[in-house]
Image (cartoon, rainbow, N blue to C red; front, side):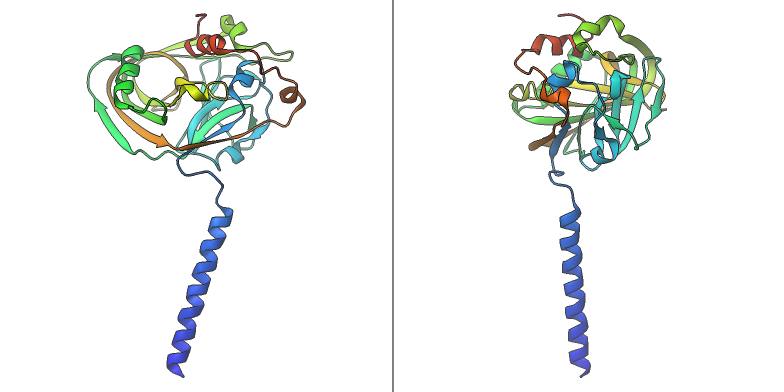
Length: 269
């Protein structure tokens, strides 16, 4: 009888463990492993879709690392270690409460698969050339975390706007630029392949956050000193789209490649 009782207890424990595993699998969000998740369509956002629609809390189910924009174009967003930071046109950077919504963001669950260290000065052009030499798959999707010492970081943020919205490239004169010298911080970004252009912004795209979490914004230029580069290779991408009248009526036939370049670099091309 004692042996039967022990066997029954072990069997019960096994069943409970299996049920717990199944429950975890059912509650785990889809597409979280090595997946790039996008809330919104890049060319739509660039073209003027600035209304809030996607909840921060929902975004955090799809990633702990990424970048985006707040509603009404009120600055720039960065996600690092699951926390979201907003840099406004005043230059002030603050932690964002997760109760709000946003118009556009791309995130992933970041896990560094490769790490590189570099000593010596690098401007943005030289940094991108170095990254190109390290990221050999031209059609790969890469999440990139760069941390270390910076002699200079130049960033930007847009002020909030109201409807009727203009495309971002038509509002470059409204940008606010910030120059930060001799500080430590993090660059959060991605390199997106050319075949994903439109749905995403192809090429490199970085936002900055200072170590003390008081400065940030969209990266315009830099002078890096000693840095560590962490790379995560992503193998899939998923997207949620706004279910709004503005999105349904948006003209996606227009080629916005030049507009995207202008917005990315902060000046007309």
